[in-house]
Length: 149
View 1 (cartoon, rainbow, N blue to C red):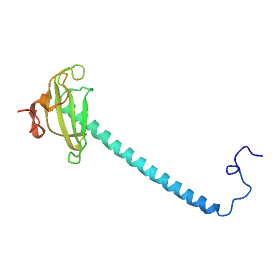
View 2 (view 1 turned 135 degrees about the horizontal axis):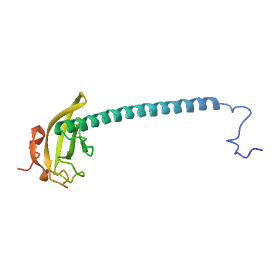
View 3 (view 1 turned 135 degrees about the vertical axis):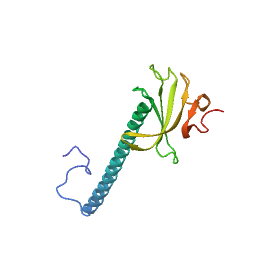
View 4 (view 1 turned 90 degrees about the horizontal axis):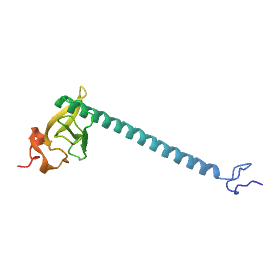
């Protein structure tokens, strides 16, 4: 006698009508696996594009400022109208992150030669979070209406 319950125990022959149920179950499992595989590939491709864009943003900030700093902060604007717009902030002189005056650049658009377009930016005092009230020295399109008057 098998230690398994009757419905789990191996059978000598299939029950009547069970083949149709098994076919439906197998089909549903295969469809579910296909949907999950497509979703996984789509998510990996999307994340790969985001990573390439963020690497281009870091290179753009370094090229624009002439500093090769690695501790930069990137904030992605996630709105329907922003269309892949990021704000990259970094120190203007060597030091720990946010310990010196920071330069924040608004970067948008497609990649060209590993870089993207700078729309403008602003400065932040040391140890400040990016609050509109603390921004100064705004420039470019992004600076319009971004700095206190």
